[in-house]
Figure 1: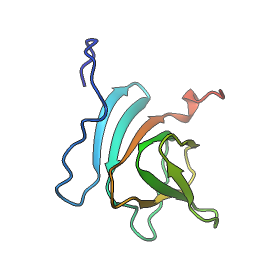
Figure 2 (figure 1 turned 45 degrees about the horizontal axis):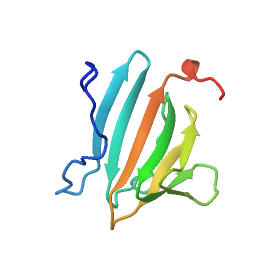
Figure 3 (figure 1 turned 135 degrees about the vertical axis):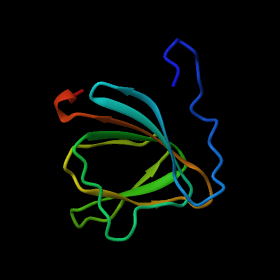
Length: 118
């Protein structure tokens, strides 16, 4: 992760020869980090819920997915350009990602104390 003003592109994607999701930390600073996540059909295991101590803002840059929250409602579909804020402590999971194309996420994680309303 160069910090010397060098321009990089987020879209040269890592090879996905195996069945694992690819997570790359693009930036890490005090109280926050930015990750690029590339999914290709991966989703959270049945019964698993993320319950994070950080806020997460995520935007879908490419592909398609759905995210479920532990509120009994159906999963919310996402397509390229959709973004959402998931406050710390809100249980959620990736219910589905498109198995026929790369799904590219950009996720910003930060301490709840850093959050301000837009």
